Length: 466
RNA sequence: GGCGCCAUAGCCAAGUGGUAAGGCAUGGGUUUGCAAAACCUUGAUCCCCGGUUCGAGUCCGGGUGGCGCCUCCA
Image 1 (cartoon, rainbow, N blue to C red):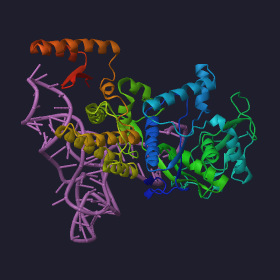
Image 2 (image 1 turned 90 degrees about the vertical axis):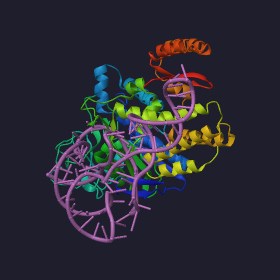
Image 3 (image 1 turned 90 degrees about the horizontal axis):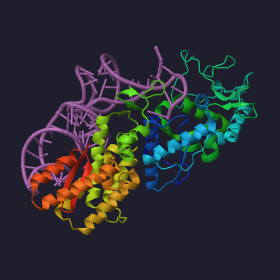
Image 4 (image 1 turned 30 degrees about the vertical axis):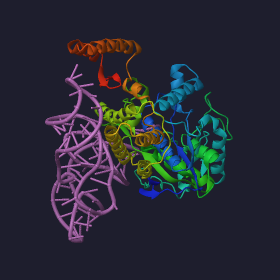
């Protein structure tokens, strides 16, 4: 496996800190709203990474946090007039529902901020004890960036005069403008936790370092093997996490850093402030989760990804090819069998998740399978190999998990389905009687319902039209 | 202003310095009562200008054009 490390900006061979094991931490969502395409991209990329590492034989411990305490959450719960936990439970559940629809497997661990407070206290206390943090008169605890020799080594930034912009938590007792809050002291607020540093709430960056130390740390030169997240988190979020961990524990945070590119919509960045977020639950109304998975995972993870309907449709057609092949072999049981295709597929993905190369291999496999089935539809050995390859693709990439018939009928309601079946039966009778005029008329009627027919030796089937 | 990324056929998109994968769309063909699917076939010298090299999409320099981070953000 080779991974592009965004800190050294080079592709490096992956070597685990502990032989045979991989510790992977990815920044998860703040649960105050529905998940959007950006959340999906990140979750999908690291889901794929996890699958590839597992296919290579590693024992992967994958943690993705859930931030369930935050100013945005507090504000929204007040607006909505519901409790914090009611709000965060609702959106945590929604997040899980959406990710599961995209075929994203649940991580090994999903620590919540509110359940990791003790670990955060430990971290902050260590930083205070070693002089890397200080408390101000209003109860805030800040990380002293000036005390960390390694600060800015993750994002490769330079500390210059222009970097004097005020941070949100800016306060004039801060020693340096870049110092960030580990703990925000709160006096007159009921949404606060008791801590050794007084009543308050954790700063945004604190939880990740604390959780990593608590759940994943290998206690070697680096806390974990791989840390991932969206490219926008590189600075300041990951820089600050790394600083906390470095100063509190003496080891670096991660040996490899991976950042996925952004999802834009029609060329524009999708962000909360622009208000053009595209929710996954809305996309799922028109397309199956697997089509969205295939589309979002279709370009390299580090590239920016532009979401638009036209490209989505082209991606769906490409996935259709896989399901067409599945249809030809429908009903046959797959047996595990290693093939050169499978080895090549894993090798392609092992090269920093080169999905384009993997898909090219997949397309070639599909073409060869169709050709072979055309040449000799009864070759059992050949079919067995194809089925084994399809099963491998399903487990490694998560493509081909659906019933192929259901896949092509996605989006048609039950009533219409029954109507279509009735018309097909009538058309079948007309065809038997060689009344092609009537059979064509019936087909037009069926086509008008948004589906198309396919006559095969096994009977007539229908699919939803694009 | 500081730091950084990207620019390959109509569209999406790979590409260890040696004469450009794959998919969608398009045209032609085989098959089919018709149609669909499947299969065969059809197209780019890689933003521009210099340089290094026997040889560059692929390295270096300079442009032009997009975009991102520096503030909550996947």
